[in-house]
Amino acid sequence: MVKQAIGFLECAGYGAALYAMDKACKAADIIILGMDSINPKDTSANIPMTMQVKFQGSVSDVEIAVKTAGEAALKFNKPSEIITAIIDNPYSGVDKLCAISKVKFKK
Image (tube, rainbow, N blue to C red; front, top):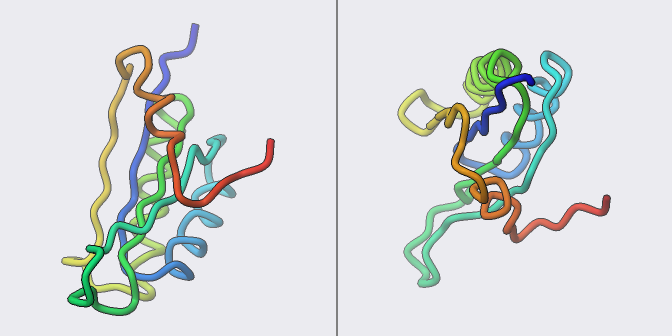
């Protein structure tokens, strides 16, 4: 059985997140679990909005995807505006929580 992982990318801008994930999906065998905007509800949020993308695959593929997505997001963001992380061998059920998203995907 291949060890699974969940990866995360946070960056400024919906278009930047889409661009970064397109590059990540072309570089590695991953699936996108969901996308969220994570700005506060009040008017203090800056534009562009901060986006979070959650994706899953084998540990090696998620490592490649996180690196690729982070580098791609630099085209539109400063390094301080980009956060990437990996959860390897996630606890059962975490993937279901990651699928909770504002952006819905048809399967």
